[in-house]
Image 1 (cartoon, rainbow, N blue to C red):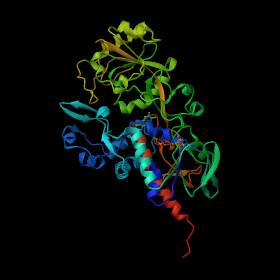
Image 2 (tube, helix red, strand yellow):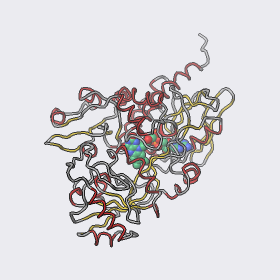
Image 3 (tube, protein in one colour):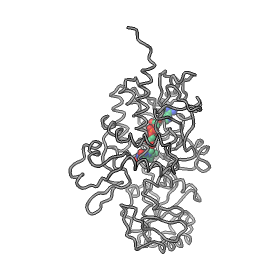
Length: 480
Ligand SMILES: Cc1cc2nc3c(=O)[nH]c(=O)nc-3n(C[C@H](O)[C@H](O)[C@H](O)COP(=O)(O)OP(=O)(O)OC[C@H]3O[C@@H](n4cnc5c(N)ncnc54)[C@H](O)[C@@H]3O)c2cc1C
């Protein structure tokens, strides 16, 4: 929708093909909380993005800063320095401008007090570089963009699935699509692909991500089944990025696919064990939003693709809201022994021994502080916990059954900095642009939370502007 708005305000006539019915419009974006990561230099910048910030909020909050350099560093660090530097640089340097542009198109943002800030000495302190979400979460963002697009005259066709690109040696000339079962076509001078990745396609998941990925729980939209990528590959587009990688998280073991409230992300404050009772990951390696996107895969690799997250009373108050919903695989007990009995499929003895070993390894001399990487670690364990290590010894104890949920895929198409889709010879395919999840090369292994929506917006805006320019350049000359 960012692409559609940008193309439209730059003078193009725009039609959006949306595969979903109107009631399910908006793809993965609808499923988000709307958390969005952008660079800012302090509260004056934030006032431009969130003009509704009250003096009381400003007074009672330490928003910190998050520079373009820090954002770029996060992109590099979290992707093991694989991210395409040109695309990452564009994402980070254009993030603030693009936020202002979204605001100018009536998208409202609010601070994420609930999930990204803790109260310290009476003041909220934000951590992890992400401070804003769209008002109304993902659905609010999608509604706002749809409203604006409609106002600008963009035509939106629902139940309209793109199935092929109309293409010859000169480039792309439109799209063949199926609407309500009827195949039809729309001729266009430029096409922007923005139809997400293939997380909801079990066959593609298994083919590209590997064995067991068919067994992962699919979060998000059921409509992101990879057609956008496949129709571009069919005309010679270059596959690019981390095709064997995906964003995946730990989430409730038994919730069905495409259910909201699936994720269980407070693991940094407890431990995660597999059904043998063994810890298998450094739960406190970094702030949650720097690790959650890669830990789903590690759960998928455990026996039965399952794990338990275990917390004691000392930290239970820190659990995120998603732990308090009705649909939750949870057991609770006053003693660890009783808890182990209730944890389905667990090796009881293995678990109790593991907790004993873990408790003994916690560096109790280092103070616990959830707002910073506190360095309160374990010592001498094969699987270390680097921060926020607390002994698990104060009942009642709580354990939450989790499995892997795939959020979105990382591999996709290659674009240049103009958002033009590249072919197998690294030439732009005339008239073809891409943005969002189906662009490869930004995320590898992991991603900084909030960078997905930002990438869709930054490259959407660029794609829309350039597609509109392309259309103008290729309009027939009018005789006067
Ligand atoms: C549960 C969940 C939570 C998330 N939370 C966040 C978050 O807080 N912050 C963040 O930055 N990122 C988050 N993400 C990732 C984020 O959703 C994506 O990075 C981003 O929304 C991708 O935007 P997009 O426009 O590329 O794709 P989408 O928003 O998925 O949109 C793709 C659109 O294309 C349509 N479509 C698909 N195939 C076709 C076809 N063949 N023809 C026509 N239309 C088609 C779909 O119906 C959909 O409308 C989350 C994802 C999920 C699933």
